Image (cartoon, rainbow over all chains, first blue to last red; front, side):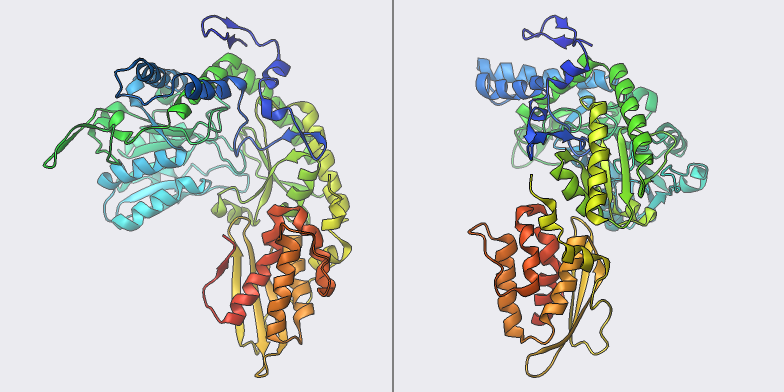
Length: 418
Length: 150
């Protein structure tokens, strides 16, 4: 583990995971008189000081607009902003930094694809394929597109373990399938899907592929070359970065063919009342003054991930999840929802006769932050026959002691309802 | 740390486990459905209001957390036999008790409904307690659209 020194030049190692955790100011507080235990990183992760400071220093030291000023501050802001594209490209092993588009969120990235290439490729009677385990963000944009174009939305089913059923892909992906869009990791039950298999089946039929990597990006190395997808979307705020910033990566040759999405400043080359010519990729997809501070914060979050290293992240998180599974399995009256073959960082469960929202309120009183709800995956909740679940999700800053606190909070929920 | 039992009082736990006045109502002349999209709670309120404006019968159906189930169950018990205009006054006092930022109301005049006075300590749960009330008012007003807490 290493980290960037304040000068940004040499890197000094993090001594251990305790030092990694100490980078997160928001974790150093008490809630209801006890040390906060944050187990809701799948909703949003906490932010390390280097991200907070990067955002802060943009506003304090070189706040100015990008791509337009000749003055020094604007040049500084532009160079820091554009400097994040190659960092992101390296993070996802994208060959061309100019294939990295900054968006507001994963949701916006998916909508961009649906509204541009989706609209031009998907016609009446065509099909769009998603999975039964998608977040609403990867359902609704395609549903809207299908309604508009008279196309059909099809769904890869999942089994009772929370694994996608992939042995029938041949009949789900046909010549009419124009888009295949699936999540890499399920936000509701934590399944790491075999997306490579899905992408490869889609490619043989010429469908474009999009991977929603929102729940994967901070937990495992994501490699677009290896995956073979056409598009990949993720958010900054689930990978230790700021809210309101996301990334859409796309194959450069596809992005070049695609029409712009939103019109406005910064995405044009020339404008007259007769005709406008557009900027090159990626800027033609970034209309208006972008979230400059967000992009700079995102760059610092990529640095943080690299500083800790995915080897450390994966080793620590998989130990946490294994221990949490073992402990939760011992709790009487607790049922884990989904037993996928590959799980990442997320565990969903229910308690006999206790609604998840009641459990969530009581667990919060023990200063443990978990999520209770449908996790924006209502079709999946229906599949499991539950209105909602309790979800604990883990990040690199969580500790083994926190699992103990979670199980003891669960016991006190049971005591109230006994 | 708040005492969680001030929220989950015995009466609330009892009504959430064994809801009263649960089910359809054959001779209903007012009904409405409510939904909380955040948590998926659903409630339907069925009412028979006579020509004198008295709520002669009232039942509910639906699914939700302990607070929302108990709130609907206790509501139906308290409001049965009441005049519609009294019901609206009771709702106004109830809403003040669970949701008002001002001085802590005593819950006086609310009878059994005072058991929900602990809800105001938990802002995220206020909608659980009030969903059935908004649905009830919708039913009395005769509006057909589903009530949503959002």
